[in-house]
Every structure is written in structure tokens, then in C-alpha cells.
Length: 348
Ligand code: NAD
Ligand code: ZN
Image 1 (cartoon, rainbow, N blue to C red):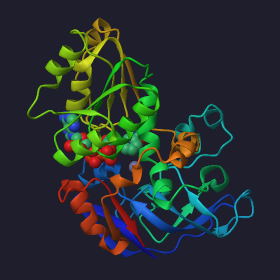
Image 2: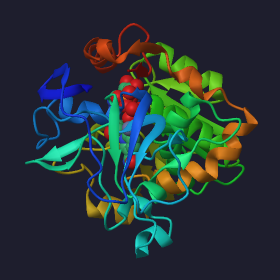
Image 3: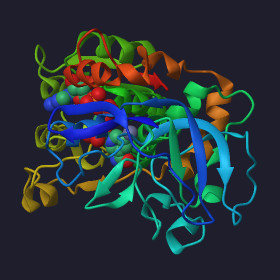
């Protein structure tokens, strides 16, 4: 089959690898209808995250049709249209039972093979899905392929970031980073009752999108976010800051912007060795710092009614629709954040 294959720093190729096979009887094979490139794919692409084997099929955001099932699966049939979280989950362990599906004891991340161990990704014609019955979710009525694709990661992750921020009406909330995840955090915060959301970035079309979704915006290159946030909060700072960048600089900004007793909810994946705030700074701010991988399988189910309501045009962040064979170019455009690109969706 054809797939987008990792070849090293800033290098992805469109090439062939063997078709996936059922390995465990709990597996399914999904024929990919659409897949997307994520900010998380950029960490190995730019060489910030190490350990990914060359020739691994990239990607963890995909939707498609079930074409083969192991004999220990249930609740799925060939031909079902399915969406998938970006990690697998067994549905049965301690973590799955408390909704922390991202930390399932059998969890595997799609598109990550390290020394031959792991799972091929979804930027391919077909993908093997372990623990298919508990990982996959049938795409319900009123949810499009594209919305299913976004539920599998960025919509769930953005919403999770807002959920962790413990939004209350009347508060001042900040989202750092207006990539796909940050934009979905804006929507998540509004959906959870925020009345004032301020989104920070510097790319004009991303700021425009944040405004369109209901945030006020700050371009951090031309305006000092700290001065503005302090002015608006009688000098206190934001009640919570959602960080959706994944750089120490952004985490640092979050610490500066949050008020004493406030919450930082970080979903950005920071590959640096250390964060740049001290224990005493955290102590002096009575800071609550939350971070981690989104339990997308848990949140995608919660968010189905929000998607069905069509209150937000989440698919409008999919600015570039290309064929899988054009994926190498897709990586170039998405990673350089040029051509007004917010997010790339690919079809095999
Ligand atoms: P992206 O690269 O498209 O977006 C990042 C945005 O941050 C860009 O618009 C960029 O201009 C902006 N930015 C950079 N530095 C900034 C700064 N100092 N202040 C404000 N804005 C700044 O990526 P994305 O797809 O939106 O993903 C964002 C992050 O979320 C990535 O680190 C990704 O790995 C992570 N992520 C985490 C999870 C999870 O489960 N926790 C899931 C998906 C993605
Ligand atoms: Zn992703």
C-alpha cells in the first residue's frame, strides 16, 4: 500500500510498505478515507522528537471504513464508517475505566515505531487498529468524515485543554497558540461557559480564525500580552491559561499571564529538557499546572452532540485538501505555516 513515510529530519516520502494484516484477533483493518497532518507530526519531522524509525507510516488522525475484523472483535462490521482516537485503548483497564484512555496500559500511538516496536500510522491507504472494539467509534448520524477526523484528535484535545482549565462564567481565559489545537481550545472554553477568551498568536489568518470562533486576539509580536491581560483583570492575571504551542517560551508566557491561584492547562507537547519556571515561582503563585496527552477516546464521545448541533464550523480549519500522493507538499506547507495553511487533510 501507499503511505507517507518518515525518512528523517524534514523528510517524508510517498512510498510503499506492505499492507497491514490482522495480528491479534482483537484487531481491525481500516481503509482510510481521510487523514490529517497534526502539529504533533511536526515534532519528529523537525527533529525535535527522536526515536521514530525511518519508513514508518506517519500520522495518527484518520477516519475510514472497516474492511477486515479479527474474530475477537465485537460491535463492528465490515463496511462500518469509523473514527479513531490517536491512541488505542483496551477499554478494560484501570485507566480506561476512569476515562484516562490516553494512559491505557495497552495504549499505542498510531504512527510511532521505535526499533520496530509500535504501530504504523494513518497517513496511508490502510491502517491496523489494535483493540478495535474499544478504540474505534462508529461515525454517527450528523457527523461528517471531516468532523470525525477532528474528533479523533484536535477537537478533543482543544476541548480537553479547556476542560482542565476549570472554566467558570465571569473569568478571563487565555489560549496561547492559534493552531488547530488552540482554535479548538477557544471553542472548548466557550462551550464550557467562558465569556471572555483571549487568544494569542502572531499569524494573521490564525488570529482571524480565533476571532471568528469568538475570541478576542493578541498578536504577541505587536502587543505585549502581559500588559493587556493585567489591564483587563485589575492587575491580577488570567484565571486560567490554555497553552497549545509546545515550547518553553509559550509555557513561560503562561506562567507570567496566570493570576495567583490560577490554572495552566498545557496540551502543547514540549520536547525541551526543562520548563523555564522555578518551584518558588509556582509556590508564589499558588499555581496549578496540568499537562498531558488528551484521552481522545473519552472526549470524542462526549463531543458528538456538540458536533451534531453544528454551532461551530470546526471543519473550516481544514484549509488544504490534497491527495495522499501530494502529502510531501502538504508537510512542507503545514510545517512552514505558509499559503494561509491551518490544517491539511489528505485522501488516499
Ligand atoms: P501548530 O504548530 O499548527 O500550532 C502552533 C501555533 O502556535 C502556531 O499557530 C504558532 O504560530 C503558535 N505559536 C508559536 N509560538 C508561540 C508563542 N510563543 N506564543 C503564541 N503562539 C505561538 O500545532 P497544533 O496542531 O495546533 O498543535 C499544537 C500543540 O499541541 C503541538 O505541540 C502538538 O504536539 C500538541 N498536541 C498535543 C496533544 C495532546 O494530547 N496533548 C494532541 C494534539 C496536539
Ligand atoms: Zn494529532
